[in-house]
Image (spheres, rainbow over the protein chains, first blue to last red):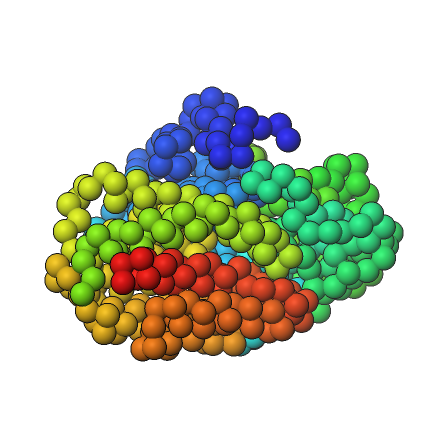
Length: 332
Length: 203
């Protein structure tokens, strides 16, 4: 691995982020990344965070038109409440702060504690939970659907609304609407190697794949013999569309994210996207916007996920609004 | 009666146990989690050791030892383990109040409350393949002896092997979580075993 040591891997990456992006205020010690002008303009603050290992999520999405601050935890481990409390204080311009939380037990518990503490400090906090992964059955028998690729949709669209000066309740409602309109499905072709463990976290032989994976190197729901990209696209897009059929509006265009897990070349991702576009066309789903690349990753995992967001005029307008972050920038 | 030093030694012994077992905890966390339970707890308990050694703020009672340990875990561990273990120790410490010495009965009652707070925070019940599968039988056996509590917790942890996880990250695996021992139940048993070791040494 290209690291100094497993213990310093997160701090080292933050030092690199600071060196590459002087427009970001990076507190390496306390692990908070803040856009320098967060408090100018009296906007609602958007704070997200989660385990490291999913880069560019979330720190790569801090900047005008998207997040106000990000809180990176240890690898695949949610941040601690102190980080979010500090981030909330750093970005609150009196308009309140929205916490964007991926639905994992650790993230939910730590953000909940942070919301209580920030509230005691006089910061108005709303929270939105992202839970877009259709591979997990949302029932009493699981921790509920995971937050994966749709986090990018939520952070981009809510960030655009906050940038325009929308009030906290409106930004929060919009973020929830984006989450409810989005679904994802992921596939792994290899297990991940975490810096702490130094070897693959589970055994996935060459020639097999895991369907319905999350973004933490955990195995999926089902293992199968390797399939060609076209068949993987049939399974992944089919799973997303079948579930998306339950949301309103049940038709109309989608924003599509074909997301690499970190270890799959763009050559393969674009080839895979050709198959995703084919399935969507066959199913009569117009694609309004597309993003292909590594955005919500799982360290060195080979594989991909498909996320679709059923988007109306308002969501598309906010999606197109200018954004200027380390990993996503357009329209300026 | 158990004094402040007894609780410091409990936390020291627990830290040593996590140091010793960190690799095994991470190994258990690999097939059904994300392979970091040992390293996360180790970071937290090393911070607890440092906080207690620093003596700032002044730690003058059993309750304060556990509350400082709990706060430190919440601030350093992250994940679900940080809030859950932190809440276990903080709530237990709060129940002990500021008495300079506490009875075994008072400690038992306080641990009941601590485990109750963990159940409430995590929303889990025994049988869900979590920490509670060790903690609940463990504290239930405290009335017999600290050793009985440690043994019951250890047995509870081993009994998670055939269970299907219904909470936490292992629950995403569905039936594939069956056949693996829960890392959280395993570390909970370590914590109660550390208590038994200190009690036996102090007896």
